[in-house]
Length: 476
Image 1 (cartoon, rainbow, N blue to C red):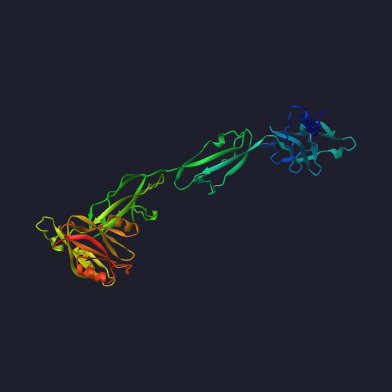
Image 2 (tube, one colour; image 1 turned 45 degrees about the horizontal axis):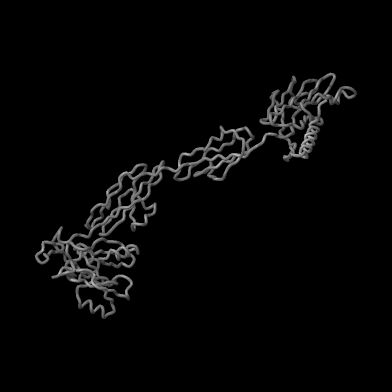
């Protein structure tokens, strides 16, 4: 006689408790399996005699006929239905659902229902449950239409986690994905369709999940790698430029690998322009001054942008007395062969600013714009120490200085470097240009430069501050 499953559990539990109380031995508590409905096998009208539920059971039928209403084993149809669990599944009960009759429960292996006709007999796992004696018609089978399978899974399951780095899953999610996988099996729900973040490409698993046998909690990581940076093959070079009243390209064209060379004008040597300011056109400028042309390679689909670089470009003021003497006039300096240039002095009656230039073209343009030409200011040499010209775009003020420290300080404060305005003569034998400052003026015209001691003293009496000699002209 077979021992019932429940009795086996009782014996095993008692044995475990006894062993746990023996000296030198320990008892590791494990969860007691809980009987659950694992699957329901419902027969269909295809008449198949084998039915499987993946990972649970296989049902085998030996009978001659299937009926859409009654199922298997009805009336005069003798036969049997056997339920076999797969490895790792323990069955505790199989319920055979009959048509229009109470179900038959089998809680002992092998889980099998047999039916014979004339005399009628039902048996579960070899034990007779109904005969023809005294109740022949009531014991007759009325058909099995489905089977409920109860038990539990003894195969341990592990958590498999999927991570994506530098990208997203299909659907733009970045959250980790998980699935439970039975020990000894391979993952069945490996994610696909991952997308790389901007600036990244490729992508691969650290190990292939589909070909990995799971024996513990496991993490699989899918990583996209950064694109290589595009490179500057030939950097743009500054052009040698002189003011001519027209827009001029500031640099030569550069070449690139892995993308397209683009350019943008910056404001200084430390602040790169915003990305949306770069274009494939080479920047141009008209006015004399210092310009900062930034460049970089905008990467193609397989490359990231290169780092930005810059080229410092100077458009020199128009040269006086060398290209066209009739524009500026020229004079020899005490018999020297060095040329000189007459500096024009102009006044803006609206702002109170004085401006000094050796450019005849600029002088004419300013007079046409309403400035007053006050005549020659002094005579400057064509060579010597440079006098820098700067412009404040906010106040409209110009400033002139020989000090590179002052020039750099003003540029850092936002002034525009307009390059070398002219040159200073040597101190010995030179004619001084006096520099004065109006403390009551915060905009254009706050500084004034003059060779006249009389004008200098008059401005001092009016409250201007004398700041010393700015530079020297050629003595007349």
